[in-house]
Length: 217
Length: 217
DNA sequence: TATTAATTTGCAGTGCGTGCAAGTTCGTCT
DNA sequence: AGACGAACTTGCACGCACTGCAAATTAATA
Image (cartoon, rainbow over all chains, first blue to last red):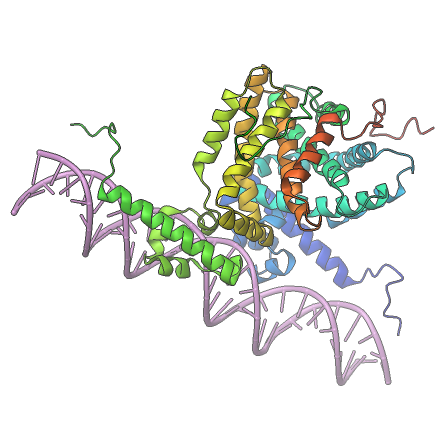
């Protein structure tokens, strides 16, 4: 009657599942690197991991998920960190902290992480899947951030902070290739400073655009 | 020997191609609205437009492109407006102008435009395709904006301005449903003010995150 | 009208992804 | 241990997206 999950249920079953999942992810990543992400078939991946094609789809909804190998715990950790952040900490500071800590996670197995990113920017389908997963995260984070800030769910600012921070990270990664030698971290730093201080001090706050062409003088 | 394109070749052929393309787009949109974007097959669309399935793929690379029905001239117009913007105008102001004018375009055939947007947020595949096309636009706009601002191509600020503006628009559209009655335009206004003035006046500029756990005091 | 080029179409084929109905493995209870 | 039930794997059939190829149709040109 103790079907509850109190002790870590490390049965043979759990272990095998983890192994299979890991094998599939590894095979997917390796093959994608070797042959280009769009030239890999699910059949090859399954073969390399020594399972049937059908089993592959029991583990991943799309081929891309296996290559991306997203860790669902990452979002959990981020949410937890957001909850545990100092009460007085300003929202953008919190976001930067979250990102910095997520980067640490990523950099720990830096080899596979940077390889994955190279693949992502290479393949449109991978990129779109990646963005899609990111958008989901953004929604969850925005909701949590709004609550933390004590703002209503429809408020613009929390969402904009999360969205802009995410944009900053994306740009930093994209720019890293061109911007010779600069670390992703320093690029992110620069972007966050811009976001915090304002992107444009000369922005014309009084300008109102009208759909009709009145007031042209 | 005058196989060149000097006069607008409005032969029967050109006309038919336009018609077919329009018919496919219309059928795709109509069916997507009726049955949900994920329950429409290419076969149905082609049937409704009275062409073969194979012909459909001669016009669109993916099913989604027919539904999205993107107008390639829109980006052209935006680029032109960016070039023609007053020399002294601040970058974020320019972006807001671009967006305001693009909104006018969209609102002119508002029926199909808003219908399309409702579809996009409904279907993950549509959304990802949409984002993918948007990312391409962002790159082009960023490059033009960087040039206009006289900054090198690797500079962060132009890209961040374009990216953040695009994020603001996206959020405005997403929030429109919850934010009872507020127009997209006013939501965009609010977002732009936040971006211009700075998302977070209390951002801690001196905080440096380290990968190791030193300086914990 | 005869020639040529563009377009459409059918057909065959690859690959993704899903439901279903076995078969197999594992945990559990007696 | 043996039996039972649940979880997992697998094969099979299927629908759908998309591509290359070659034949057929249609429009433009000489």
